[in-house]
Image (tube, rainbow, N blue to C red; front, top):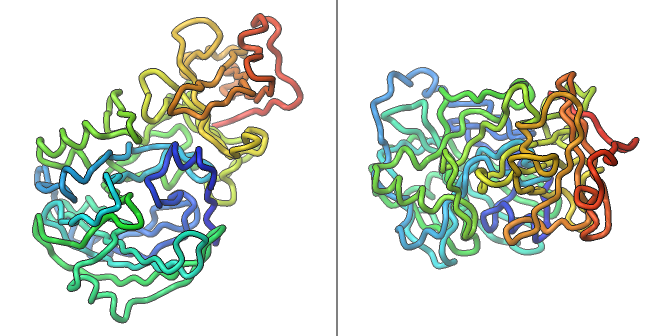
Length: 413
């Protein structure tokens, strides 16, 4: 099974922690106790013990320690980001970007049970052949409905690494790399603040994901997105001082999210409007590695949610000629028919025009604009219009002249 991975520099600047790949189309990792990521990133498994001894949850917060020293944290990745081609659905993954490649101690954020340990070795790679890093999956004993993982750990504590002796291994390939993953199921109680290893080194992004089995998201067609469940913001499970510190650094790069919830969100659908997840009309399918090109997200911007919205897809007709599938951002206007919010389009088929944002922090798309209409049948009509830079029909033509061509597509929930 292959992971679909964007390699253009603009995509990396937009979405990824340094050194990480797209989660939604990532091959399955071992990790029975926490979750199995297979195919399209479906969260489909949990440990036997979790299913039988969950019990009632003690009140939080559960986390009393930062995972690394505060001075080593540059920013905390917002939950629910988009990163095509794989992450068309909001991404159920967060993490830390470190300030430098220098190794920094990684510690237990609270009293946790480590339930799975894994090593990844790059057997063939154009940039990191021979590199090895580690992953730890854990549960929260005070509330076993809550579980999570750290990935891209540079060095494990020796007593943890020793558990990989005799681990089960598998070799898999991505578009450009071949890896060997060796994992073992364990149950190791560790106390808050106990050393786990070191982060940093070749990969300055530390994945830190958290899930709650009680959480469900309200998608209009939720059956299409089985992977979009359980993900929660880690920040709110920390003691107030650490929570506020992490929230103040949540965003991407130098950009900070200010819209509520500040930590980000997986919930983008607004029923009865054009905002949310869509699929190409006539395709009654579930999101997966085989179908992801059929899906579209018309949503608020994951960081600038109070001022911008986005169009995200890997559909061939909407690929940028140089960058491929990208996140196209639009500044939102409160009135008129240019750059209106997706949720404000009337359900009467009126055509609206969208001009991409080109300011720093957004893909500078200058050679295309987009026509959109929310139709009375509850579907969306959408078309990408190529043009010379600065010659957007949104700005050079009257709304009466806007019209869909035979290239327009129809979207359904």
